[in-house]
Length: 123
Figure 1 (cartoon, helix red, strand yellow):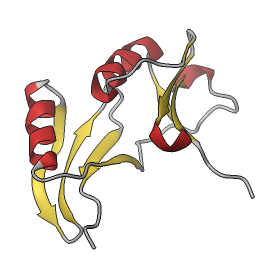
Figure 2 (cartoon, rainbow, N blue to C red):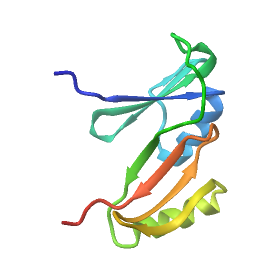
Figure 3 (cartoon, rainbow, N blue to C red):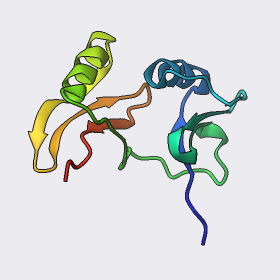
């Protein structure tokens, strides 16, 4: 069975998005072409950033209907990450709050993709 290991976000400007994700992820891309940038992630995953106007077949457009989530373990790790990302000037879509699954917050990347931070289940 195929194992998903590449997540692609359609972006307006891959170079601008790469700058954002380079700082956010603290790592360099493995691929940096004019229309596509790829960041290797832990767990054999890759985050791809593809210039929207070059996507084949073309997309129908519309607003983002998904999120990229980061599970951050550790005491007070989510609160510290929230303060760090807020201080970095990232657009806050949902401030740090506790939901039924635990503490969480959401920021937006330069293209409005939702990036959620949450805490892994402690059980």
